[in-house]
Image 1 (spheres, rainbow, N blue to C red):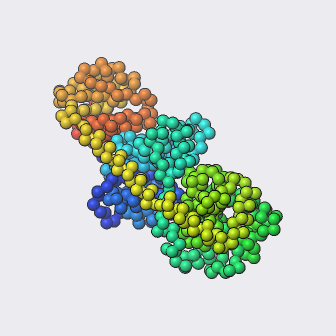
Image 2: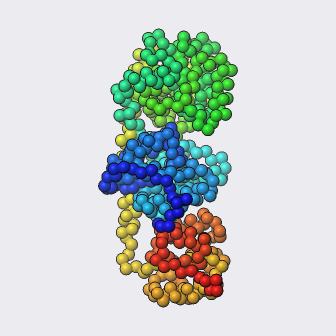
Image 3: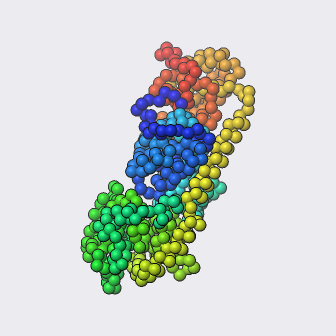
Length: 536
């Protein structure tokens, strides 16, 4: 695609030292690059694409993980893809379509709903395979919300990161069943490995939490709840559970039996953080629960803890905290719904790796905390070893990357096969863009173009009110029309159709801003014919 303007061109961070490309070029789209499972998976897959000999692009607003993304060998394309505003979504689709053509992208992979709409439109415009990954449960309380969420099942392949999510997708969108692939979130065992964490890293984390640098034999157990400070992560449930333990005579704090650490930031949810701090103080457990902010070194954080919580009151699509903690040899208490049912072997079963409790139930959490603390260091260590074996067998990063890369190769191969099946010697296809007020000029120009292309198939792109006269024009073989006049979305649908059935030449018959925009989407025309005022 050509004619990019500086105001709409994506801001692409350069990647030094490019290597020869032997694998597919993959564009992942994600709103931001801050802490989170979807963001970390984006980095992991980018690294895998580069290792496979391909090129990795990530369209995002950026964030604290930008430097780590660049370290994978990927390129950051800075776009406002977090926005849900319809005009921004459509503008992003235009920018992404330009990027796809300019960078010869093979696969478009969206990881969130708003940017997925932009990615879908861009993929359809450019004829590229479209992949989505469900990283959340995506509640649909209304028909409109269900439609908005449906973009995540419009891909050529729909990746679910747990069996729970795969079942949920199939129940909500039955037509997607044949395209759903379950690929559990993978954990990098070279990063989440106790042997790979230097003692100094653990010391630094402890000090940042206001703890002594070294752990003493009589020190309280550290109970860690990682995650954004947001209501559904269950921090308030923990505060209530600690109050229940106090009522039973089990106290926390520096001189007690445990200290709870809430590691995560509120991002934009500062109202809830204030509410949570008020609840903690109101319950009288302020000396037993510490809100320490974002932690950049999670492997060291898990090692600094004795027990890790994943207490979301709504189902986690996968729940990477539970898996990462087990990889680091720490027992887990997780709520008994969503992906946790696949990642945590509950106490009472053979080879238990933790506890599963009822969601949003402070009493259940208090009982599990009491049981975990009663095990003592040796009992928790034994359970942690089982957790390590469990994760290494089922949730290795290599497996996730291998299966995802296999999908990319299959879709890229299928696209290449479809392109190779184009019939040699087929009629040249010519498009006439006539979206103005029309008039006799169409007939005159069509006759001139037919004379220049006597064997070509001539198609007119016009509005519904002009379709009848276009059909009546001598020399026209087909007419494309937009069912939603003036709609940008309708125009994008037409352009996607044109990308799937490309034209050899494009003629602009009106020379308006709208027609020039349409022609720009379709590529630089070899000849542009514009009607004069008299001809109109």
